[in-house]
Length: 240
Image (cartoon, rainbow, N blue to C red; front, side, top):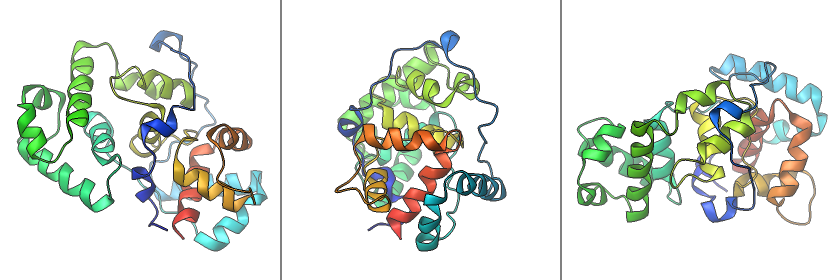
């Protein structure tokens, strides 16, 4: 098994296509549940974890095995989303190397403007695949055109926010969910299409195999509005 957090590289978008979401606009999005915590620091995460364990004592054995998870965060905005795209289907070490090379190729910062101005060949030389170059360029164009507003998801309910993000070119539900979890610290975001979460849930709850995306989503309903906290715990359990 891998270290906690390496699960970010284990769930290709083809797996996540099982989780269907309706198209939604920013104006129609469900409003953020005020009881959902924002996981901005370790103390806040620990308090949310205590709430979760009080809600569902089935999770106590996971803490006994994995310990209390460490909160993992990335920078929000385009740079954070780009880092998640870059890391897809790569080892953590390879993802970090390619992200650093991409940043250097763009003059030190990954911005929509820099990506759009860059020669695709330069991005490929940094280690990005052609599909990832296409995705990053498409996202940059959508953000600059204003067709999607990353700031708008701040006030949306977690599932609605993930649906809204999938309007971005090349962004599937897993990428959207991971962005909400790691870049925005959304306490109720959840990624039922993540392979590591499926495996961990299958082992933790005595299933005959890994949980299906639909089955995992159903299990996670008991953890609202703390599904994101449960995801961190399951990832830690997977990596233990």
